[in-house]
Length: 101
Image (cartoon, rainbow, N blue to C red; front, side, top):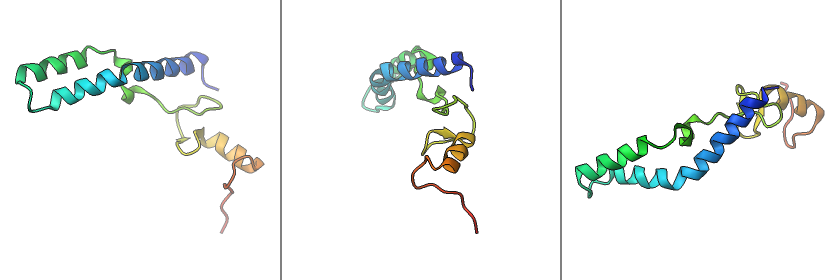
């Protein structure tokens, strides 16, 4: 199980991303809009750079929903490889079964 502080940090980042999403999108659009003057585009880039770092969606880490493990997480299920295997063996994941050939 991941440290609770790490899980809480990810939740905090998710809130920051949601809070600044519209502002970030508007500034990014303005920074590449060629109809604006060079100074206006540079101003938009400066404002974009001054946004909080955690407001960037790139800084989010996928984590297992059950354990909080950051590595080996399957996006489709939102589970780490360990938990996915355990739940699949118990038959708790619909449509998933162990391969054998």
